[in-house]
Image (cartoon, rainbow, N blue to C red; front, side, top):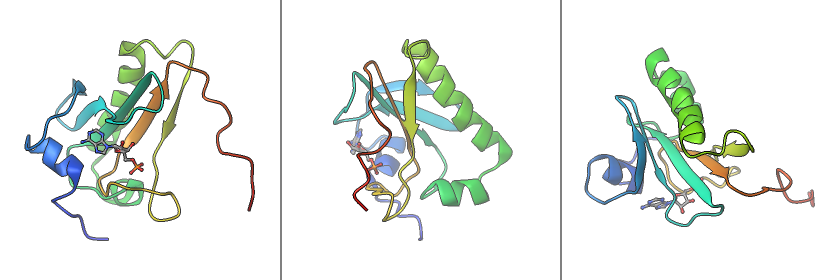
Length: 122
Ligand code: AMP
């Protein structure tokens, strides 16, 4: 899938719409989800134009990949959820129910998150 530069996270990266930023470095931006599903719900995104985990894992530089992974850990520590635990999630494509076509890692914490997925009904 080609990258759509009009997706909402591209607009955030260009400063065209605001975000509640919690972390930024050369390669990565992290901000609070606009519709949080936990007391801590942050999206960690690469600044580069990558549609998904599939795209990023194939095309991103080692520095970009390291920055994203380190940023997730740093945000968890900085927001105080590392000790009690948290969940990371990257929805990918149609089956993964990805809504925004710019790679984002959800970081959820601050409450017990329950089972990974609803009971299997497939
Ligand atoms: P996904 O379904 O994995 O693509 O998740 C997209 C997430 O982006 C959802 O949790 C939305 O609430 C969130 N979202 C959409 N627009 C914004 C925005 N402007 N600022 C912060 N989060 C957003």
